[in-house]
Length: 74
Image 1 (cartoon, rainbow, N blue to C red):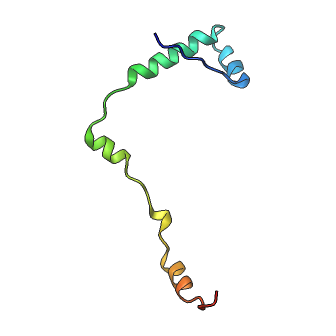
Image 2: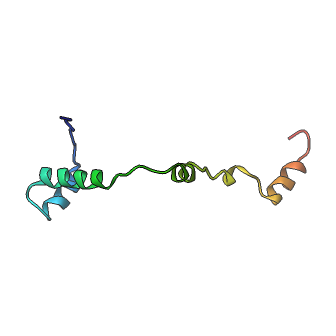
Image 3: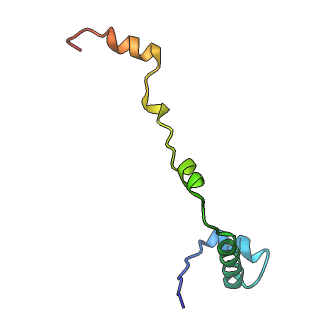
């Protein structure tokens, strides 16, 4: 058996109490529901998920011109 200790923030606890009195059971059922949805990913899905967008690290042509035109002493 695995023991999971959850600390539920008061604001979330109050929102859950609007739906049910037994917050602990509600959270456990939600976790069980999510665990039932898990499945194994294919190699293609793993590869697609691991692609990193590096476009933020590239300079635009205007930025490149700006930096190349800076004086040497800057």
